[in-house]
Amino acid sequence: MKLPVLNNTIATSEAGGCASGSCGSSDASVQNLPESIRAKVADHPCFSEQAHHFFARMHVAVAPACNIQCNYCNRKYDCSNESRPGVVSEVLTPQQAVKKVKAVAAAIPQMSVLGIAGPGDPLANPQKTFETFRRLSAETPDIKLCVSTNGLTLPECVDELCQHNIDHVTVTINCVDPEIGAKIYPWIFWKNKRIRGVEAASILIEQQQKGLQMLIDRGILVKVNSVLIPGINDQHLIEVSRIVKEKGAFLHNVMPIISEPEHGTYFGLTGQAEPTAAELQAVQDACAGDMNMMRHCRQCRADAVGLLGEDRGAEFTLDKIEAMDIDYEAAMVKRAEVHDQLLEQLYAQRESASKPVIRVQGRAVLMAVATKGGGVINQHFGHATEFLVYEASRDGVRFIGHRQVAKPYCEGNSNCGDEAENLLDTLLKALQGCEVLLCSKVGYEPWSALEQAGIQPNGEHAMEPIEDAILAVYQEMLTKGLLQLPDAVDLKSA
Amino acid sequence: MAFEIVASCVSCTACESVCPNDAITDQKVQFAIDPDLCTECAESFPDPQCASICPIEGAIVDSVGEPLNPPGSLTGIIVGVAA
Ligand code: SF4
Ligand code: SF4
Ligand code: SF4
Image 1 (cartoon, rainbow over the protein chains, first blue to last red):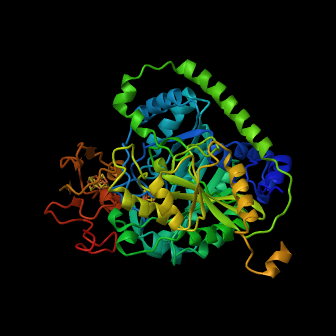
Image 2 (image 1 turned 90 degrees about the horizontal axis):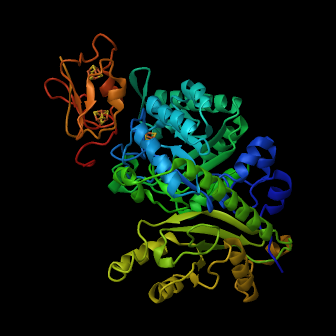
Image 3 (image 1 turned 60 degrees about the horizontal axis):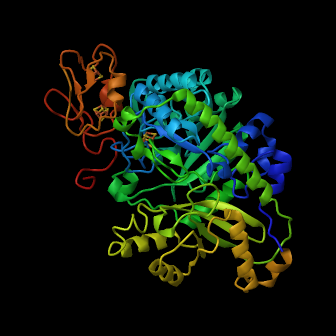
């Protein structure tokens, strides 16, 4: 008895899209997209959850200024639309940024996407952003470029954006109703004035929608980000989703507000609640009804470097780059080879994931996975700062989202011990709702703590493809009778 | 007639990009306004541009040291709570 991997058939045979059951971009609406866009999405490290495991991306922080204020952002730190709050990136000049990109792309041949996402609003810094793009389009033509923006000056930037090797644009749209907007944006800088309240929100919304339309009209891929703020825009995001989809955005990514008081944001200081994992999932599910949803966005940071949840930024500080001796030509050749190999692996994984569809009965289970990439279970519980959460049900396996913690359970071997207690609590909280934890290994102490918290650790599937392992575990739980459906009605409808 | 940037500046560069007189430069620790160049935007705009885009309350002050964006004016949060 095998469980299907959700959407697998659609994605491989019809959409030509990502075949990963976990891919946020393989539902029916992908089929409505033009072939060229479908092809782009299928193997895109940002949009295909599966490709995300294989390719690396980086951001460069060249754009410090911002032209609006979001209540979940503190401008002492990076743009909260694109970074985890409380992070300060090293701001680079366009020249330094180009150098860094070339160095990283030489050292990490999986590198395939370069984004400018902050630390402010890239389009509020048009000279710096566009100079970086201009030079990279010329010097690393094989690297895809992307940019994200709050949208305020998007309409006036569309022409220039079209001139570069821009792969996609992300617009953060939190609302389409100015009354709601006024609760999220206290002011904007517009036509040489600071504008506040509902008026400010109206202008911002109008500009965002206009910019979105202009990009679509010119055939540029547009992803929309929304920050879920419970009690303010949670229900409203369903309408946002509908509208941006009608316009032609191809992905909608709902991410949770992070409002810890120590970040000093308005929402942090006024005690705005963060959504629970379940609330987030509910809104994402409600939006997914009419829109592709992206669930693997990890709000990395404006100068993040690397694969999946990792950040290798520290290896590429300006000093270190200066000391590197790089053959850029050779690096580009190597990159092309590695990219081909990765695509092969990715396709092979898709093939082997094509399972016959036999429906089984059992309730849905959330499982957390520790992975370093490659689409397999290959991380030690104690080293993970990020867990991928999947839902296994009688309909198959689907990717739900990420749970992150600031620190791994043991950083090296040095501080496994006292501090570990607190870290473990945080981890257990982050994993709430999950019944199984799949990783390559778990230590003895966290093992029993996990078990007590109702999360069954499992190291038996190390190095196996994530979805296969989840199916196997689900199967096992089913056999053990752990997955009784709540009532008979449910059984019949299965 | 000139404004001044004080220590609470977070070096976000926003003011630098909107000053019509190129009076603002990055002085490494914080940004600074050249008093010989700053006209308080009098001849160019109804509102001083730097103070209209600066996200930090109190970071830009006038010639007598009064903040152009007093506490609470941008965030709605009054000092003491915000600190
Ligand atoms: S757009 Fe980004 S940098 Fe600007 S206020 Fe909002 S979150 Fe902060
Ligand atoms: S008041 Fe006007 S001229 Fe003076 S520093 Fe600010 S922007 Fe420049
Ligand atoms: S806008 Fe304000 S915080 Fe930003 S650099 Fe200028 S004075 Fe400093």
